[in-house]
Length: 334
Image (cartoon, rainbow, N blue to C red; front, top):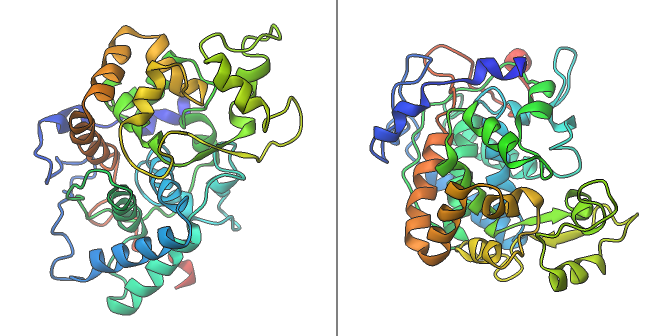
């Protein structure tokens, strides 16, 4: 994948860094949790306030903000490129197959950015706001807390092709998904732990329909899907139509961040093919699924580590990129 070459980073070094501090980035700068302590001391408080407000109004928003950070980091690094609207020189990543009709939370980021600009203009990047919002969404729904390394800057461009090619798809094979993670400097442990974010949120019928009716192109359902669960899903996800019908990724505790997602995989009740293959297609990932299903604390600890590692994919630091005033536009509009 030619588009992915620019994304390969030195992230393998980061597994040795303590949780509160991220290693040296390719841009030559550092990310660290205290980055705004003097320049914008209320930044984290403002993000937390607006995320809590958004999630109280719409519980789905926690998963949406978490997903937004993920879909940003896998394309050109964690640089808020996903937030850019199309313009004369930019083809928005919002138009890509993984994002079209499903990426959401942009208005929440806009609201946070406006409040922070009022408090401390031209200081806090949209990329850092997204990283903080992902952490706050996790904590708000009962998940682990972590100190978010900060200091990212915002990109001046987007990559529609990168968004189409680099983000794992619901029907990708296990090996394809793992390869896409490895291209970002993430390993199989990160893959399984970060997939655990599917303990909250929803997926559309179109994302898993093939599992119900034609998994392998032979007109047969996916044999790794529990049949009673499959029958329940078919009632609202027909062979045709209903593409946008929503289903809980974790039907046991859909708005609570816990380890029931992994317990569901043990019972062959993972909603997406990309979920269930973690248990059925690889021995190492199968053992990790079991470990996290049996011990929520171990899952939480690894999830926090992997989120920090993911948040450190190719950040723009120092004089690279910019601090956007409006997260949807580059600063030509300043």
